[in-house]
Length: 164
Image (cartoon, rainbow, N blue to C red; front, top):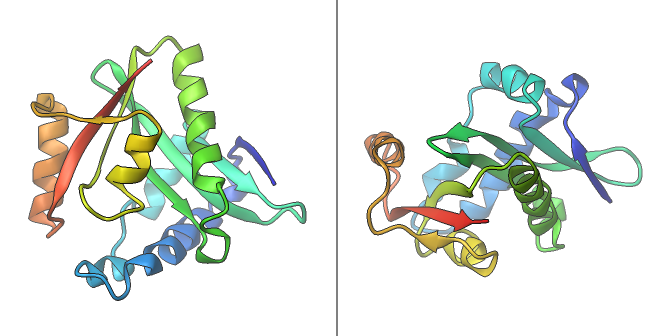
């Protein structure tokens, strides 16, 4: 398995990966998320063109996961990370995050940010293990994201930041 920048021919796989990863929410109190869309399909091409998406690729060339990023405030913002359900719990998410965070450091961002669920084990606790801290006072831009998420029914959310 390797991690690389996404190419335009990877774009059709990205919504499918997001859908598959969402199945992890089945059986939780956030079950409906398994049917939710985080990133609209038409948002992927500009993210890929800007060099803000990394994919994990199996030895046979199958794309197994991705992390999508964009600048927000002074930071590299993690929009979404998704790993196909058949490939979860194998360290792929950590490798995808490492690639994105390495890019953030090399691009001289002072930090990375994201929003996520506080208590779902593969969300805030996972990012905390990578060094992200929950923000008591998110920036106005992060507050706006949290408000939009709340309007969509996403509860128990927090903003997190990792200073490089």
